[in-house]
Image 1 (cartoon, one colour):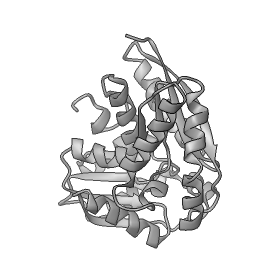
Image 2: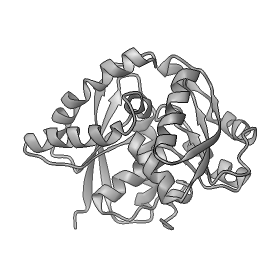
Image 3: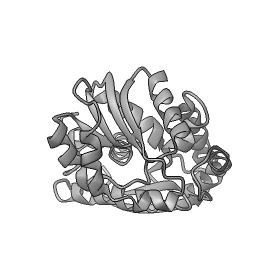
Length: 250
């Protein structure tokens, strides 16, 4: 078995969070498991979170997958949940297959996960049928995310859209506010809490806090993407501070 794994991320040009939260989780994992990780990124232009920019950005993902595969990486993650979901129901499967094809064509085949697909998979792993969601998007995009998740058989019983249009402002959102926001959601009948349905809105430091506050398994797009990457690598899906999904129970 390999001892060092190369992690690739396809990220929006304005994203500064996935390159901190996923490495943070995997570095914490290194404290309890022998595997080591390096991190490599390619960028797609996007500044404002609206449908037109998201569609134009998604068209650049093939180039990014090709560029990253030049480095013979072990797994690639497409790190923009709303871009994938805005392309229509089930698009994460289309995207993952197409981008994997680029790596195959380039002679360095690698599995590809999307943050959108990872969130859906993570919720299903937890057995969640009903959830509550915190999203930074403008309300129409937040509703699109809610509907996408519903199409995958998971009911969103309550959600909040923070309506932050600029992607850099999303990254500046104080994650310390998230527990109070979560507390106001109708989570009593939920099976899980999505504390950040966005790879740009920071949430990692408060995942355990929200889990303790609500008594519900709590995950984020970053936590779910880390789980999906570890699964694709055939590694134990465990990382300290990653909440229930990365507790090792799943």
